[in-house]
Image (cartoon, rainbow, N blue to C red; front, side, top):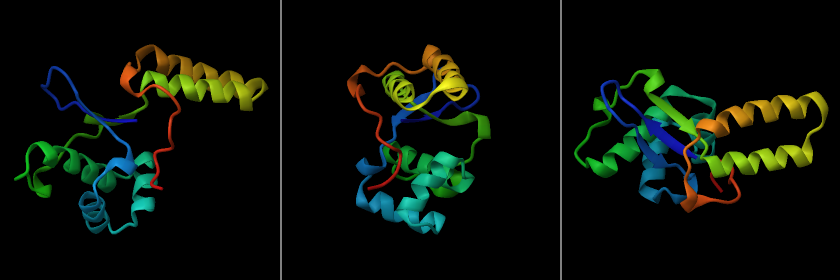
Length: 136
């Protein structure tokens, strides 16, 4: 999964691989303090679109590149920040859907996934099973 930041005026978006298990402990603790959530709840809320959690996650990735950045300086229009699966992750999800779903439900899921696969980021370095975007 990727956190994709495309501020207005930028030619290309910035894309960070988002794997909650790969965040450093100090980053996880900071995210818990900033959002007043356990890290497990934080990861679920990021996926569900909780604004403060997504802002805190963006801050974490931006601060890696700009260590003096302050949290108060991170502000974005909602459509400038998205979470996206890579093409390989979507293909894995598609195969799992074919195995586990049937009928109209399968058709609806495949239609949605196929649409997303057409434009998904192709990250061959991380092919394989899509891990759940939650903390272990």
